[in-house]
Length: 268
Ligand SMILES: C[S@@+](CC[C@H](N)C(=O)[O-])C[C@H]1O[C@@H](n2cnc3c(N)ncnc32)[C@H](O)[C@@H]1O
Image (cartoon, rainbow, N blue to C red):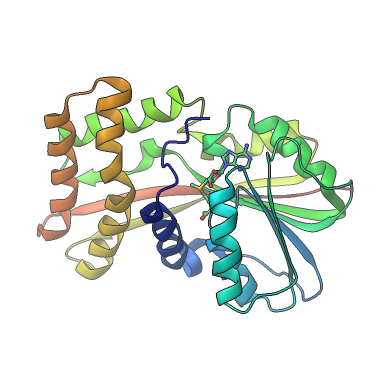
C-alpha cells in the first residue's frame, strides 16, 4: 500500500503532536465512554489518539490495530510511557479484523478511512466486532474545505496535488462527506454526521491562526516531494503554494477555514 504520509520517525512524532492539537477541539468531543468499556481504534498509527482517550477515560480497555508493525511498536512504547495498561495492540488489516464477533463496546477511527481503497468493507468489519448497542465514532475531513484568504493559485495547485496523491493511493480526499452513506451501507443505525467548522483570522486571534497554519504546514510540507516524484508536479509552484500558506499567519488580512466531519452511529 502506498500510504502518503509514510512511516518515518518524524511522522510518528507528528501524529503525537497532531493528537495533542485536536484533543479538545475534536478527539474528545461528544464522547461519554465509561470505565470498564472496551474500545478499538482501527488505523491507530502510533497510538497518539489511544493515549488521549486512555487518559481522558481511565478504566477504558484499549485495543488498536494498524497495518504497520513500526506504528504498533511505537504505540506500545508511547502508551506504556503514559502508564496505560490493559492494552491489546495488533498489527493487521482493518479489513480483516483479528477479533471474534461482538467484542467491543466502542469503535473509533480518525484520519484513517481517507486512506482506504475499500472503506465499506472496513466498516462492515467494525460492525461485526461491535457488541449489540455498541457505538462507532468517525472523524475525517474533506480537503476541499481548507480555504485561505488571501487566495493563491499556487496554494490551490498544492491542495489539488494533495487530493490527486490520495486518489492515486486509492484513498478518498473527500471522505468526510461520505461517512453517513458508508455507515448506512455497512448496516449501522442512528447514523449522523455533523460538520465541525473552524475559522481563524489574524484580527480575531493571531496565535490561534498561527497554531492552525503550523499544524497544517507540518503535514503539507512533505507532500511537495511526493507530488513531484509520484505525479511529476511542478516543484516551484508547489513550494510557492506552501510558502504562501505559511505566510498567511503573518498577514493582517490572513484567515483560514476548515471543515471536519464527525459521524456517530450504533448497532442493534
Ligand atoms: C494518518 S494515520 C492516523 C493514525 C491515528 N488514527 C492518528 O490519528 O494518530 C493512518 C494510519 O492508518 C494505517 N492504515 C492504513 N491502512 C490500514 C489498514 N487497511 N488497516 C489498518 N491500518 C491501516 C496506516 O498504517 C497509518 O498508521
